[in-house]
Amino acid sequence: MTGQHRPRPPKPGSATPPRSPRVKDGQKAPQLRRPPSDPARQAAYDVLTAVRERSAYANLVLPGLLRDRRLDARDAAFATELAYGTLRAQGQLDAVLQACVDRPLAQVDPPVLDVLRLGAYQLLRTRTPTHAAVSATVDLARRVSTAGPAAFCNAVLRKVAAKDLATWLAELAPADGLAAVALESSHPRWIASAFRDALGGDLAETRAALLADDLRPQVHLVARRLPREELVALSGGDPGPWSARAVRLPEGSPGELAAVRDGRAGVQDEGSQLVALALAAAPLEGPDARWLDVCAGPGGKAALLDELARERGATLLAVDVQPHRARLVRQAGVRAVVAADSRSLPVVPGTADRVLLDAPCSGLGALRRRPEARWRRTPADLPALTRLQRELMDSAVGALRPGGVLLYATCSPHLAETVVPVSDALRRHADLEQLDARPLLPGVPDLGDGPAVQLWPHRHGTDAMYLALLRRLA
Image (tube, rainbow, N blue to C red; front, top):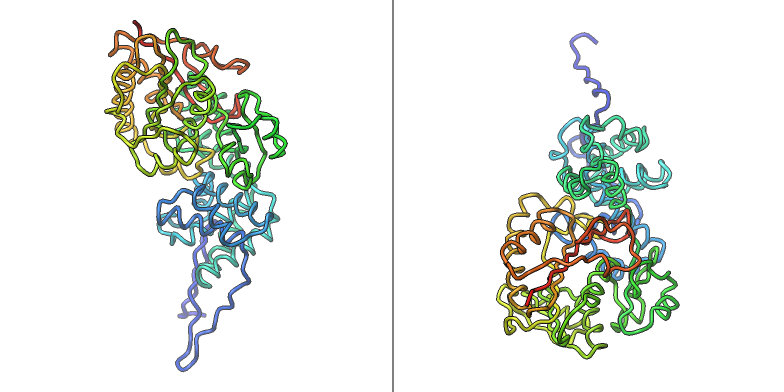
C-alpha cells in the first residue's frame, strides 16, 4: 500500500456527512428512493421550518396545519409533542448534538439541523424506541434533503442514542450551578437568572420553577357565559383549583368545543383568569360603573372582565393600539372596543373606576405555552419594553378617578417588569398607594409576603403572572 492514499479514519465522537458516490461518464446518477410519508414527523418538521424561516409562532402554525392535512388524533398528538417539545428543548438538544458533531452547529445546513433536533428529541425526551426514532428521522432527512445529509443524520443520531439524557446532562453540565440548571431545564441562562432573582436567589426553587416551565402545560378553559359545571361536563375536564371559572384538561383540542367556538367559554390560563377576577373583586368606594382595559388584545382578560362588568351593570371599554388585535377583542365578545394608542387614552381623565393594565412584556412567564419564545427573546428586548410599561402606567393612572383601583399585571417574573415599574409609579405619583393583592386570590397558597402577587408554574400550575393593586388617593 506504499505510495497509495489511505483515507484518514474519523475522529472518535465526530460525524461528518459522506461524499456523494462518484458517477462514471455516460452513466446516470442513481435515483434516490423517497421513503413513504410520515405525516406526524413531516408536520413537526414543517412547523420548525416555519419558525426558523418566517419567525412564525408554533401555536399559530400547527393547528391550521393539522386541520388542513387531516391528521388523525394519534398522528396529531405525536406531531404536537414533537413540534412543541423540540422547540422548547432546543438549547439542550443543541448542546448534545454539538458533542456529536465535529464542527459548529452554525455550519450545519439549517434544514438538516431541524431534522437532527427532531431525532434527538425523540431519543432523549420521549419513549420512542431507539431504532424507530433513528430510522424514521433518517427517512425524514431523505424526504427533505438528499442521501448525504441522511447518512450524516444517521451517524449523528446513533452517537446521541449511545447515552440517555441524564448521562448527557452529567457530562455536559457547566461548573456554574445556575448554568447547569439552565441546561437541565433547557432555558437560556439569562432567563434562569431572572427566575432566580424573582425567587430571592433560591437556586433549588429556581430549578423547580424552570423544570415545571419546561413541561407540556395543561389546557385551561374559562367559563364566561355558562356555569362552570356545564363546561366541565362538555369538556370532560376538571374544575381548576383557584379560579371559580377555570376548567383544566390534560390535553385536547379545545377549539372543537361548541362552547369555545360560540364564545360562552374560552381558552385562558388560570393565572390570567385570576388577574381579571382580582380586579373585579378589589374593594372600591364610590361608583363602580366605568371599567377600562388599557391593553386589551387579544381579548382573553377583556372578555372575562366584560362579562363580570355586565353582571354588575357596569361597562368596560377595551383599548388596543393594533387594529387587528382590537378586532380579536371584538370577536371575543367585548361590547366596547377602540383601536387607539393607550399612551393617550380616549377617555376623560380621572373618570375610570377600575383599570386593568396588562402591560406588553417579555412573556417570560408564558414560555411553556410559547415554545420558541425562550430562544427568540434576548435581554436587549427589555429596555424598550420597560420604557413602554412606564408610559402606559402613567396613562393608566391618569385615567383613574380618585378612589379608583388599578391592577398592573405582566406575564413575566422579571423584576425589571414587575417590582421596578410599580415602585417607579409610586415614586412618580404621590397620589398612588399600593394595596395588598393577596386577599383578592382567596384559597390560592404560597403567595409570598405581598403586597404584590407572583404566580408560578411549580407552585400553582399557572403561567408566571405578576399582579399589583394600586389605588388613587382622593
